Image (tube, rainbow, N blue to C red; front, side, top):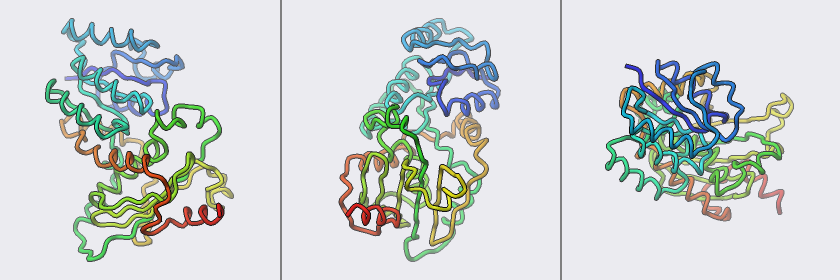
Length: 321
């Protein structure tokens, strides 16, 4: 039996993946909201959906559906809105009788998770997080390989992610740390979750560099030591990427061997949705460790040089002297 969905932030970058997942799983979209009205993409997926530009009217519509208790009963609210709105929109879902499916980060602050857990208990509903890298076939194979291997020493891991952004980024919500959580949360949360999932919980955390456009540090996990660097500054791209006119550089190595997972991204949201619909999705407990570490990084000054320093960070520190 098909389920009824609503969606917030439908004009945003990530929303099409959710629209595709809802359609691929044979379900219905009955309501959508975004303050921007450039939502012609809805015609491709659900042309009959009720669309709102005012959240208050959207909220009233969902409340009306709940009270009517008819065939339009809302089962899931997919949340693709800016990070700082996630907590409020999850609460909207639970209050209107729907489970929440939320993009990363689930919330910005760890203590918000405690309140959401209480709401789950009160309502009997669930809060799910989109942790799509955990269903990537290559990464699942890697996790299985790591779990079977016997390694007396911690793995040596290097994470480098540079995704150049223009001036617009600083003036959007993504460039406002109170709204996005900063680079470590907005961009790094995907990778922190992946690393913790692969190598175990965080034991030590050192931040070597903390700027608006770049951040880097050193993590000691249960089974790995990680040098990491994140940046949105084009000048941090390696020469090889610039020569190829590439705006993004991504690399994760384990004991100097590159993890290759460039392909296989197109169906990941649909896979996560199928898991959720089968009551096997990723919940608050799964999301908590990466949210906690991103929060710690955001609130730590970049001047603790204990542990191993990422080569890119080392180069920046040397140039700044």
